Amino acid sequence: MSQAPATIFDLGYQPYDGARTGRWARRAAIWRDGIRISLGLGRGTGAKIAPWLLLTLALVPMLVLVVISAVMSEAQAAAEDFELPSYADYYEFAMVPLALFAAVVAPLLLCPDRRDGVLALYGARPITPADYVGARWLAFFTVAACAAWLPEAVLFTWNALDARSPGSWLTDHWEIPPRFLVAGAMVAALTTTLSLFAASFTTRRAYASVGTLAVLFIGSAVGGIAENDFSGRVADAVSLVALPQALTEAVHWVFGDETRDRPFDGAVYAGWVAVLTAALALGLLRQTRSLVRG
Amino acid sequence: MALVHARGLTKSYGPVRALDGATFEIGDGITGLLGSNGAGKSTTLRIFMGLTDPDAGTAEVLGQDTRRSPEYRARVGYAPEHDCLPRTVSAAEFLAYMGEVSGLPRTAARLRASDVLRHVGLFEERYRPMGTYSTGMKQRVKLAQALVHDPLVAFLDEPTAGLDPLGRREMLELIRRVGREFGISIVISTHLMGDVERTCDAVVVLDAGRVLRAGAVSGLTDETEAVLVDVADGMEALAQALARRGLDARVDGSRLLLEQVSGTDYDMLRDAIVESGALLYRLAPERHTLADVFASPRTGDRDSSLDAP
Image (tube, rainbow over all chains, first blue to last red; front, side, top):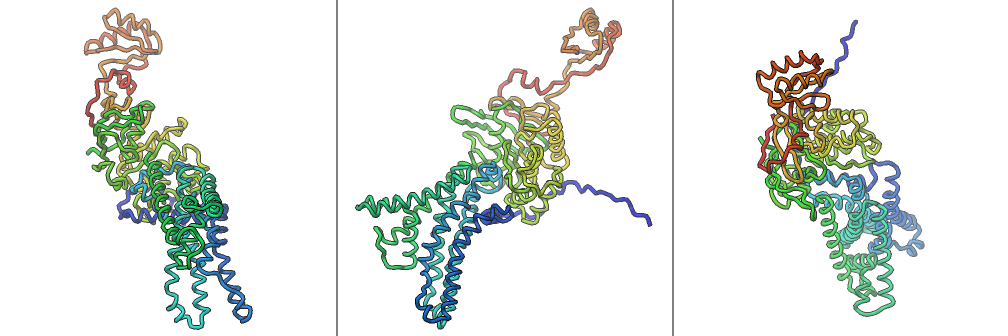
């Protein structure tokens, strides 16, 4: 039996006649891409190491503590000596890996686009610079906030399960989830915005990371010296540059903890964190707009 | 119908005036934005894409003011002159993503990314990181990303920059195909007159931010009343024979150029060739080249419109 000879059909160019999406779908595409970059998805192994290592550092300790608590609850006497951290205390611990995660990974969402000249292509799409940087910001914020919330959710779930009557425990403690959501959002928002703001000034991710860490650690040292070794209003004001401490105080305030031995009330720290985040976001937007539009 | 309107575009960067009241229109087909370095070509394209606002004047693309909503860019493509491709991402992934950001649904964006990469000849290499591509391949990806969302018009800034002669020819052929077969109007900026003559239907010539000429390429390279006589041998004898008949021949390299030739002059030219014994290689009406456009004195800026055939 003879076969018909193979034929190659050149279909030619096919114009696109289908539906086109709106502005929100375009923003969502940038957001999804940002999530993938943040987690190193679709990239090589090297791109996955930093985000997953730092996220693990933020998540795993809580899991370990909960497992230890579960094991110890079998032995009643030992369980009385073991106490899980409070929600606010765990944020205090997780602040370091979360800040490192933001400092090291967030610049990846802006620096390569700038270094490789891709910003001009974003500028030529039917979006504004605000759409671009807003979606990038939201992508990293989503990952950072989830990393902050997840251990708290684990702790909350365990506390509910460990209670004699989970139903009544949930009724008595319903206000905890909103509190840890707000506190986690606050931590994620400031670290995300600070790191992306630093990244908007350089094409080199390393410079942005160092800049972010310098602001956090040097600010912390300067604020600590001002608070401990000096007194007066100026010293108190200078102590606010210690951003990790300011965040910690704001988190405790969100959880309604008693006033701690600090120059300002918890609400002042929360307000300062909010104002600083907004100012950095404004600066990030202006910087991105000037980069895209030249 | 004009796709692009520029009215009195003026743009300065500090003391440097990049555009100085440029006014012109661009229609369907392939149009060249021709000018030397610093003539204002890239600035013009950036204004059309809304990447820069003019200091004065207005730019309209697809009937929309470029300073207003970015929505018109859903049907406009752009490939900048400089590198603009992420090194670690594959062309297929990047194009699909750019398609989505341009307003295509996810699945359609992926399909079109593959399709467009096939048309530009990169189908086999589409999953390789773009950092490993040659300059020619990168230029093709730049073209592909400008086409992935099926625009009505695409602006290509120096699309043959950095290409060797073969790569340049292939890129121009590709652009011609996009313009002719894909039905996508193209505006290319270039300082190479050969690119425009070879590829474009129409041209806007910019010089120091002003429009020097605008019109169909065929119009600017119209035949003149001069005749070009190319002889393989006996040029001097031919020139003398023509002079004896009262015809003023100008030697232009290895050719003779006769200005203002009319009906009976052709008979005399024939006789002179026979008398001189010159070996006639070519006899043709002389055409203007785009180089002449630059060489001729500027007649002053004027409103210019063109609709390519």
